[in-house]
Length: 248
Ligand code: ADP
Image 1 (cartoon, helix red, strand yellow):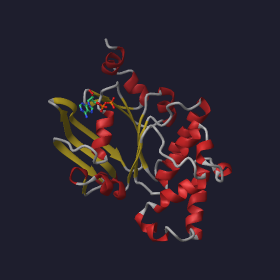
Image 2 (cartoon, helix red, strand yellow):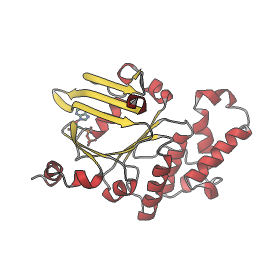
Image 3 (cartoon, protein in one colour):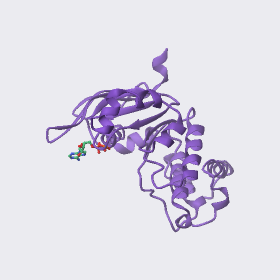
Image 4 (cartoon, protein in one colour):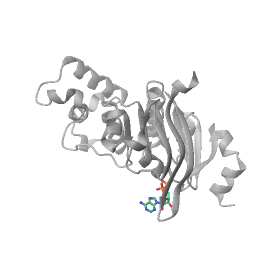
């Protein structure tokens, strides 16, 4: 039964701002474990779509399901976050004065399940989780440095690590490689590919080299709905997509 593999299902989502349709009957399905890239020109509705998924914006019409049963249009932002949808905005929100290790530790403690240990030492198991995440985001050697001293790319990875400490099932990432060096961009692609399967990822990105490196299915948004969907090469050769990007 394929329906059990769907992690996110948006159906006919419409969002209007003063009569202008930022999303216009948007329908989109993401499978569990998938790494999906979302591209599209400015104003296409990418941010509004993520706002709907995270409960920041209520759609005027349409349905949004997380997993089989959770109706996102009826849930509040914190509930949705707690249910396992993590969102990374472009600008990292890390605690610059605290060490890299402490940042991950704090991220874990905002999870209610470990809340009661706020004033206690980390258990061995929790330390292992931090160590494992440090390794994943390639910051093991930086663990004891203040986060403010990291490079731009490393700060982005730290924030992704902080999201991972909450064990999200779906990660929404807004232009994660903006401002990164080519090498950092490559490392980020490797990280995301390694996260897929265990997590589902939705990546909004303009950097086509990065989208290519991720290798997943690509959805092109335009004027609030899906214009094209498929592998990068297919959508890049789609005449409708070319027209939208080149402005005819
Ligand atoms: P993208 O992220 O793809 O650039 P957005 O989702 O930010 O697109 O915006 C889609 C359209 O909706 C744009 O034309 C934008 O101006 C409009 N829009 C977004 N948010 C608001 C808002 N709060 N009020 C009015 N218009 C908005």
